[in-house]
Length: 329
Picture: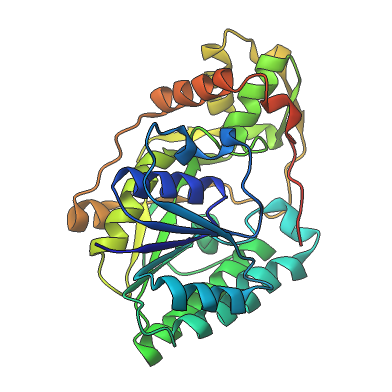
């Protein structure tokens, strides 16, 4: 059986994927630059009997020697990388931090990994932000047109990995997912932020009036897709992970508030749009569906109820956690 190393395991996406691996019975090496967070943000701690998960603190900006030692000691066969500076709007404030983590440190990581003789598959979790705003449903060969420092940094790492694949036959696979959500997501993301604000009687600021259009996909569906790609995807290929249920941010917020019995006018204030924000990106996931038999199973209404149930479960604890992004260089 494959032995997995998950980089960025304390991120929302990373922790949910670790939970998916644990349920499937895989041994998991979990690494993150941050300490283990509160159980509310670690889905794999919600299991009655979680599988074998070993955590070690590793920051790819500073601890690549420690990562090398972990590789030599534990000999994982499959590596999935969620580690990145991931906020879009905030990347304008310190663009060099985004370039350092997402380009320089990531390339240094790949230099180590291409010399690691046990590696069978490396899944690089990237982003549709590399495409910029899109019209219609785009496939994996859509040209890059990044519009923010974050998107530029992710596009640069993706292009570097393409060269590694061509030059070194590096066993990379790429994933690009639509907007992910689910229980355990950080409170500054739009779905948990709306729910927690409404429950606590606080005003929600909606940038630009919420006119941007997105597809939101439950992280359990994304984790299932990521595992299929890690085990059976074609090396060198990129796979889109997305549904086809389009919704504007305003409609999303209205839907959440309706399910909580709140009025939009009472709960929301409109703010200016943030710079460089893409109006829409819509990912065609037919390749993933045809090649690996994946489909999204959690509809948006069901998924929102899932996050509401999580917020109610941890209602006493959540107000003590930041509702705004706190930058770590």
